[in-house]
Amino acid sequence: MEENQGAQELEPIRNEIEETASSAEAIADKEPARAESPATTQMPGWLKPVLAVNAVLLLALIAFAVWYFMKGDKGGSSYPIVQKPSVMGVKIAYINNDTLTENYELVKEARRMLEDKKNRMEREIKAEQAALENEYRVWEKDVKEAKLSELYLRKAQEELMKKEQALYRKSQEYTELLAQEEIDRNKVFIDSVLNYLDRFNEVNNYDFILNYASGATLLLANDTFDITNVVLQGLNEEWFKAYPKK
Image (cartoon, rainbow, N blue to C red; front, side, top):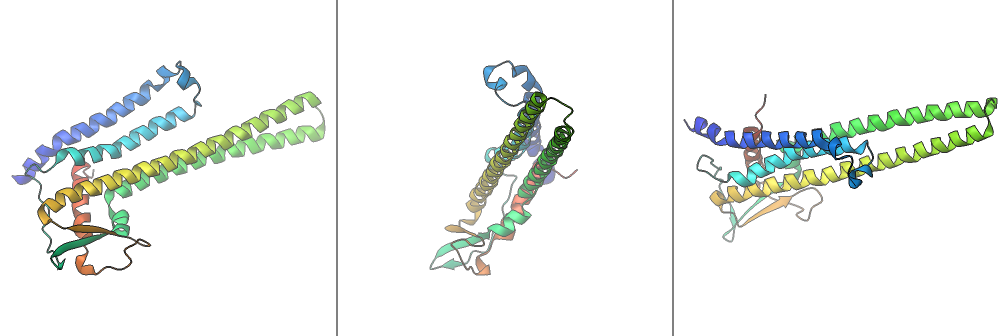
């Protein structure tokens, strides 16, 4: 009975996520229609589909974060009650950030999408670089054979240099796009964890929940205060509710 009620509560959230993704796809479909505006005409043509795809992928993660902030505790959710050790009456716990980032499904999915996009961009750049190198070889052959006029060869060289500079700019822009997406992904990750901990702590009432990670300020922690697995399980349960395995 409780499972049916939980499924009914999640249905509007799923619909909302699907509508958000559909809206992003619709925006991507309409992108060419805005090509006449002054702002768009200054944008390289190859960059438009990349930005459109970025929007769709990022909205998928943002939709999950929105679901976190809007759902709240509607009575159907329950959070594990953890036995709370205390120091002089102060209730303290910590979360191992390294474990969380390695095993949280939201992070794993975002990492997979980012890696796929990076690989696609690298293949594209390498293919264009190989084509440009081939054009250079043809030009060098023409220079050695001296069958074409000097004017033609000079203009051909200038065109090759322009292509080389454009390819370099494209590579730099791809790098910046990936870096920005990494920042956006981390923001969604942090927001989702903090939001879950707010609701989790309504039941457990910790005074402090610390972040423990390699190289962080907290250098050593007693496992007694570790609630990583409990929080990780709760985060992944909510992820699979929002995005069930198919």
